[in-house]
Length: 420
Image (cartoon, rainbow, N blue to C red; front, side, top):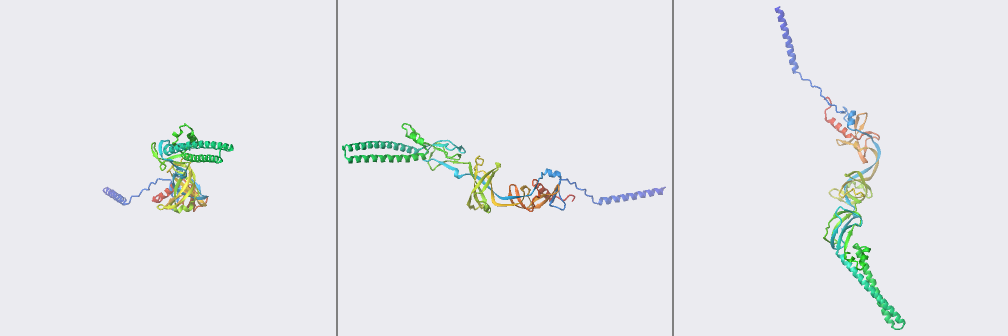
């Protein structure tokens, strides 16, 4: 009995020793790494094919991916240049006084729109007042000469009657005739003086009606005739203004500037390398940020013969109709100038082009959810489409959402592959 108990005790110690050694061996072995938990993004790069991407249907929907086929179209090279709006210098007038005078009243201010014939300022014209006085004096002198002609005519006619009655010598009659003709010459000369003065009055803005009023006796017109008005020669906008009531002015001083802005100039700069594809007479399109949906058509009318040294650009001038006055002076605009270079080629939407590592690419759609990056060479662009070399006509490419595919492709290159 005692022997059996010893055997049981020895076996128990052996089992404990085995368990202890097993525990020590297990503690020395490395702990196995658990499998990583990967969140499915819905977009993966196909293993072994770094140019290919697969997307789930949900990812395609969220990325708003749209497919369009490449097509063959006629393309025209478009040159874009930044420009500014300026007044048409042929429709700008600088208002000056025709003579020295005093500003009595100003009817407009800078920025006002005026109609043709609308008064701008009223001036007490010193020279005009002197000219009116001269004109009235000339008329008085004319009346005297006309009276002398009438007297000389009657004196001559009486002499002719006396000569027929042999009551006067022929020489006396001839003398009276000469006096009559001399008086008539004085009348004609005075009328010429008056006509010349009337022309000067017209230059100061007086009309035929104004001059008739001057000729009316006791009309008092001569007292107000020197108070002349400067009127707008055509409809426009006052763009410069430098005048005030009470100011003494002369013809050398600019009072204000009137511009017709129903037609404006757009001045832009074209780089030297692009001068070969633009020419005078080309039709252009002008766009501006305040009216993004509006296109203002016009014509290129001038290309400068001198380049700017610093920028190596030439100034070009475009004439743009502006009947609604939407284009404002000094406004920044974009000028689109179609060139003479035209050709037919395969094109894709401009939105389909992405640049990856300095290379232009498109993403060609395959089976559902499968896309492949394809390098292309770009060319001319027109109306949202761009010429590409390396694609056949009818190739389905991603237009909207191509940037999402680019981002997915770049992310797959950076992140470690799933499971490693």
